[in-house]
Amino acid sequence: MEISALTRSVVKNNHAVICPDGYVNSNVPGWTNCIVNVIINEQMGAHLCQTLITLQKEGTLTGSTNQSQIFFYIMEGSCKATVSGESKVLTNGQFVYVPIQKEYVFDDAAPGTKILTFHKVYEPLQEAPVPVTIFGDAAAIPGPAYLNDPALRLQVLLPDNLSFDMAVNIFTYDAGGHLPFVETHIMEHGLLYLQGQGVYMLDHQWYPIKKGDAIWMAPYCQQWFTAMGKEPAVYIYYKNVNRFPT
Ligand code: UGY
Ligand code: MN
Image 1 (cartoon, helix red, strand yellow):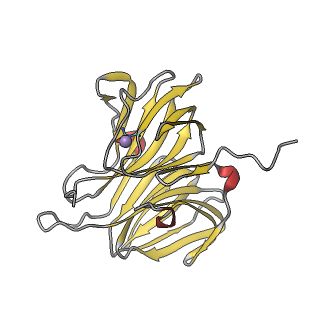
Image 2 (spheres, helix red, strand yellow):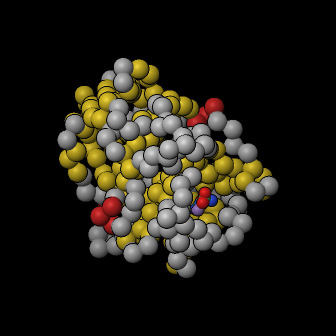
């Protein structure tokens, strides 16, 4: 019998590992017939929000982005996404970035459809226009070797220009691939494992990680990862970018 008092999840001041076994569902106004898990939020000291939504029969997301832009990524299943009147059917690996002050509806979902979201309060810049809505497909985005290591591949899902103050990337590590050095940086991350397993070092503590786990890394939380097992380890992650370090 499993021991119910055990979990791999931890929540610390500058990082968290959140495994699905600890999820408790939230009700979010406008998101109906859905199971919603708020995985990362300002309540834990973060400056982003990350949720995982599982749509049930007749599951619908209706709302508008106000100060926060939202990146929606379809992890499983399919649904129709409508942003300011423009509609597209999205399936596994496809996404839509919804900038501030837009209305959105997700409906016609296959029951069990899973959507990952990253939310960030938008910081406007005088010299760059507010981004427009972007529909995309991770399968169509190239994944060049990261820092010349062919065992690591990085796909950048959003344009990298000054209009954007958030990035969402997919990082693929072949088994045995690892970050080339311990990263120590001002940027914050929210992350979800899509495939595989490995060991993450966060603030000099070592965590076994696998598909379905989420991680929050505060600014300056030192980080390093190595993939293990027989298949590549893949994670999708958020990063704040392109703004003056006040
Ligand atoms: O973009 C990044 O900072 C990335 N290399 N960090 C990470 O994967 N933990
Ligand atoms: Mn990093």
